[in-house]
Length: 222
Ligand SMILES: N[C@@H](CCC(=O)N[C@@H](CS)C(=O)NCC(=O)O)C(=O)O
Image 1 (cartoon, rainbow, N blue to C red):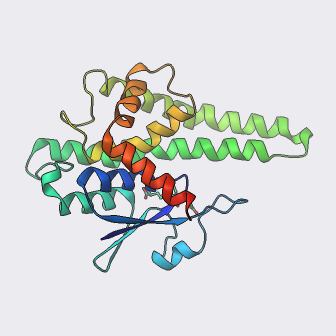
Image 2 (image 1 turned 120 degrees about the vertical axis):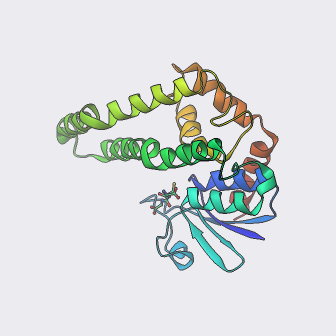
Image 3 (image 1 turned 90 degrees about the vertical axis):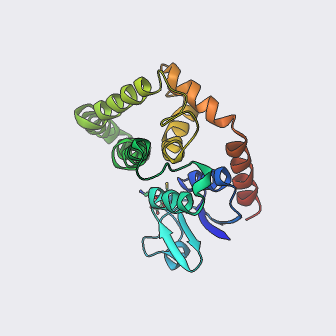
């Protein structure tokens, strides 16, 4: 039995989808973000020293980092096709998208989200103008360009393919899903028809629907 230590509104939703996609038996243990700081509660540190989600336990092993967790799950279910054979070219493609997701795609999105939260918190009102200038300057100088470049890159990748690697969903899709779903929900994918269609497509998968229901039920009953 896999035990997923899940934080509400977090990347661990990917792991629920991954577990559903391979047909694993699993349990979701919910942790709630601190209402003021939005950080994970200290109890998560008892499971893994990083204290971040997702964390998964299985057969006495404790695993952190979504990419490593997805990789581990896929290797327990080789017949699922979520991770191609290590000698196939598609294996390298899956590794690329998995690492790209956390190494390049997510960091600028997270930085943007943090800066926008900081903007909301600035007070008193008269320093708001200065804070806005600084935050806009940081966005213009780096993160904004970086996000835009990533969006164009992913949009062009999805122009001729339904999934990131091959003809069916793989671990690459699980890893890319969280950022794209967050952008979709924030209305930021409207100008991008391929990414919009992609999020709609993945949300129509039985495994994804079941995963989201499992996650919401676990969150509601915790
Ligand atoms: N690269 C890590 C990122 C982990 C991470 O930042 N998790 C966030 C949730 S999306 C978290 O636990 N935030 C709460 C905190 O930092 O206290 C992964 O993919 O697992």
